[in-house]
Length: 503
Image 1 (cartoon, rainbow, N blue to C red):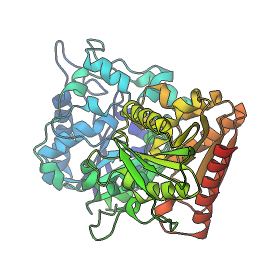
Image 2: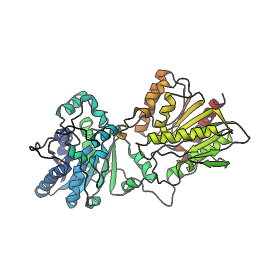
Image 3: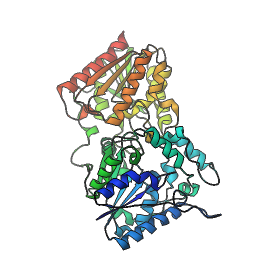
């Protein structure tokens, strides 16, 4: 028999699992929900300091009772904050646990408190500085739950219930570092990704391909993944689907990521789909210039990569085939092309990355071979949020803004509190600036949703947007296998950008 032990997240208790638990029980599983102290379990005693260790003890008590009574395979499920006490307990009972399920949760590390996984950056700063009430962090008001995760899929009744039953989160549970011996690393793992809240499997695979050291372990064959097209509380928004996924996870099912292969370049380092000749290139600081024929001054296209890209990634993005390929193609069509390295190494780095891009643009405009009044900016993928500044206040010399398979609104799990990097909101102030948007037909759902939001907002304000569709294209299609459709899209997009530069 499979025995599920379910640990709820911040502010919530066993009640959130009611419908999921009923469905698991109906298919023959044994289900236990953990009542964490102060969150549906016993109330804290007078003067008692409730911290992460308190909650680990709560989970251990259930594991120990189950191991004695049933002897079944224990699958330990942690949602949101709940993965922290779940992992802490599993580390001390690793031989008793058959699998750990991270349900739309982070990847806790030894010595790091749960506060690091709180999505709202501003709230993290407040708590670090001593915010919160003595009794704990007060639960969100009804309209403030999105600070903790996407409420997509929740009915009005479910949101009302979530709000009515929420309890203060003891501050010590967020501030006390998690301590792991390493024993838990031997336990198989499943991640359930809620794509209405954050990245799906394809985006996680992309991060593995980029060489992010912290997530290389996710390509271990003992790690599986599932996706649910819902927000952060799937036990309330789609309990039947969640129960089905948990049952499959317990049986060892799920998608496995492909590990980096030293014998084969990762997708972002494969050849560009057009055969473009080499061009003269000049490197200054974080910027490379690709020069066309003739003395100029020429119009210029500044090419901005996405991310986050690990700080130690080599080669750096300005040497990736997609960006060198576009740069050579643009230079061959008579414009200066510039590729830029910037410091978008984490979702908290958009401010630093924006500074780097601003400096690169000014460096390009200052070059005597560049027509300072005819500049286009071309952003890719996770660089999409960097377009917001330019959309909100486009300078007169900016003749076109282009985006390829962009992220155009922060995903809820990013915790980006700064409204500055939100192109969907910024486009209302774009005025007459032409926009070229290259849309991949097989885009990841979580990214495609932001593109559609952007286009809806653009239509509402009458923005000048030309969409270049690649119906069979995937995210990063330029190096994922050449097709006539993809080649044509690259030529059309470059042609549209250059036409606006010379108009």
